[in-house]
Image 1 (spheres, rainbow, N blue to C red):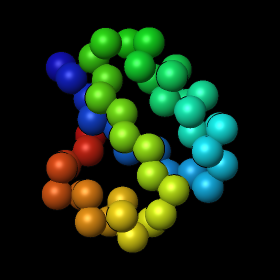
Image 2 (cartoon, one colour; image 1 turned 90 degrees about the horizontal axis):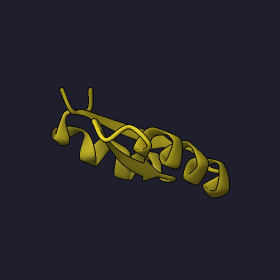
Image 3 (cartoon, one colour; image 1 turned 30 degrees about the vertical axis):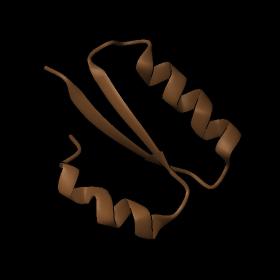
Image 4 (cartoon, helix red, strand yellow; image 1 turned 45 degrees about the horizontal axis):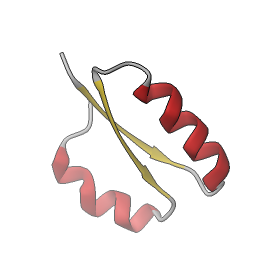
Length: 48
């Protein structure tokens, strides 16, 4: 099963580390957001 993961974090450096760790597993699709409004608009993508 492939999981869609959304990360929201103001610290871009830390977000990149988290994204990298999740992408080590090929079953993960990861999107990073720094703006909560953009994240809320993207919820139609149905993260797991």
